[in-house]
Image (tube, rainbow, N blue to C red; front, side, top):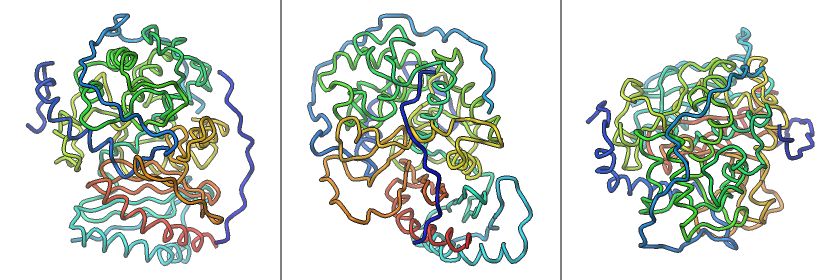
Length: 465
């Protein structure tokens, strides 16, 4: 494949700079804890995640009940600080082909793009039919040409809102990178500089929390110690405080930057740090950093697990009705976002265009590059590759062997897949990004993504020639 030339960016560490019924009581949450355990198991052993064979995930188990203590009263909201906004069967569906600035394409250009993506269209259509899915959505964005392809099948349309589970992680990590660049927190500084309840784990940094490198246990099977991350009736600050207190006594906790642990309470802690550093709620941060500058129509965060009884690992019985998601002060930072295909496409375009949305600088060019670095490999020689929210190398199962070295590793593809079948990926060197959504399972979503990787790459090259 002939790839386009791309700029070389020198990367350094950034300077500091039942349905619809709301669970109304703590008792109701506790009654659901045991039923949530299968969900934790599914999260923990998704075929999306990896573990360093030399630095395997801690397998110690304990029957000890760890008392939850807190060194502060984190129930109060973070102090508000006024900061300026950043400068910041299958139904037929129409194919959208526009650029970021929405120019009118000539007829022959539209025909060329449609022809280039013909195999992509047929592949998704056949997959949806063969797997008896309710539909799918797909958007392909190009650094230089904007939206190259935007299509929906079955029940999906440009207005459909879907839960994206772990495909939230890149977006969440970007919040802290943005705050770092504004001097409100330091990604490489101890979180004790920001929160006063970190205790003996206060030396952990935000960068470690976002890269699976904090040493705190990640998502594990049948582990209810960190169940607060699934509870909508607590607060992000309270959950983070409890999580840090538990992790301090958890024998599975190891030194930072020594083992990779995917997901888990670390992301709630990162969200709490962002709230405290900015003096704003997570919802306010998402609106200020992404929704306004990028013009997102239906993007936000929630805690869907209890309100939607989303505890089986398969997509819940939810058609995008936001009224069924009650407000929460404890959004799930590592997996609680919802979006339309168009919304996520705009976020990917931002990552391809030096951090800009509609001409506004959401992230710096350097910040985007830092998120894409293989931090886990660089910091502690892990064979897996994980940056700040992005998987940067081939994904294997927990406990799996390291992939064999290849003289031709293929294109650099950064991915952020999710439990419910969503997958986002960008190929920065080739200048395009993709968001795929099926409302099913991670296995189904990954099967389709694997089929589409080479097809979309070829289609983008053909449409740009």
